Image (tube, rainbow, N blue to C red):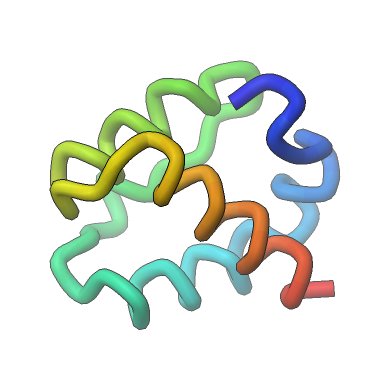
Length: 70
């Protein structure tokens, strides 16, 4: 997910982004959405596994939800 978004931007808005992702994909749990700085690829992988979406779709959702969380 490197380059997909600014890590600080994601971290600062994470609670808002997390809520939007849960709304979009109701199957996501709090465990799926645990954010650990530096482990963004694992986050994307967990979301992919739970939702069945492609890596690109998950990254796009993260970008869009992060941009609208500001």
